[in-house]
Image (cartoon, rainbow, N blue to C red; front, side, top):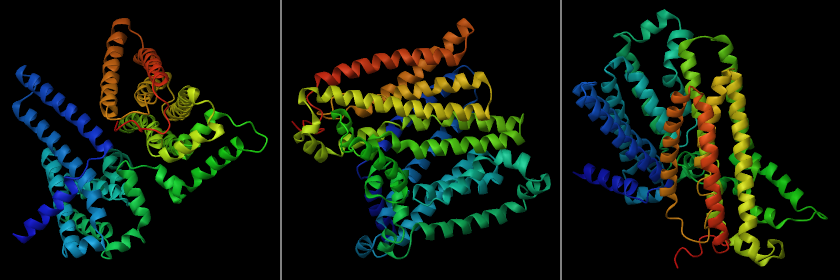
Length: 479
């Protein structure tokens, strides 16, 4: 009974807290996808295109995915933050209970996905994947290695490992041994995730806490402002840009000063590290492609990797809006300075700079993604297809960049969801137009996305110019 009460208290603290904006967006989007999957399964079962058993199995997979998201994205990161000396005094067995609950969630999710696959030989791979996900979201970089191997097992088993090794590893004799090793790895990982020192992990493992905030969709600009390891390199580029704009004898433009009030996240140098990372990944894939040219397994892997890179574009404006929301003090001081310029022109100048910054970042990211696509795929059709995806992602990213920053931001979540649904509808319309006209899907996607984006920016421009002065941001939210 005491164990259940302690576990219930931990669940109340970790799961009933205020849900982050990123988690709300992910949850609502996942809910729409779940409802769509239920409707699609029902229609296919009714038309006898799918068996009832397969439909139930697919819905069970959706439920298992939801459970995994709740465990890995919400519970695990928050349980890491609970492991402090202050909390341990209120619940002496807290660390033990946290480790037990995380282990139970790991076993449950691993068992569910293994059962749904129908092959118990996949238990070690599923366990490795779930463990790597939990470690990564708790701020331990080594967890990424545990995700890479299961995710690329088709390529590794068919092309990299000897056939005899694969047969030995997947045999019925090796399954208990690999499962035991997986359990041992889970024990070691839990000890790494939950240090026994309580508050010691806030000092010795401070970098882990920073990475945990990143994994939870936290504000990257906090680390930039503090000059920590993750942001020190970016700050050097930003400092050079700031010195150039504020150099003696240089005519300071009010628009640029408005952007500098938002901090490093509102400068294009913020994305230098991301561009370099995407380019490095592309070069690595290009080198691997040269060895496995023409392999169908690797071709499918490369295709999914290229499509997934547009996620960087989707994230390209989130940090800009967050920077505006968290620098009200700097904005209020800037409005008192002569460099702010005419207050009647503040919104127009800010809108011009925000739009220029967003389009510049989108152009940078799109260019490097297309370059990587060309290095890996080397085909014009693949390049056009990727350009279409980049345009759709850019359209969604530009949602909310221009608007009423002086007022409340409660509708931002609804706008993002509507933008995502609109992008899906545009992709469907482009697919239908491509089939009717026998033209490229990519060209139709680009054309539709450019037109819709122009209309969207025009509406946002007018809304921002008609709004009260943007600085300080959100000051009218409670009025």
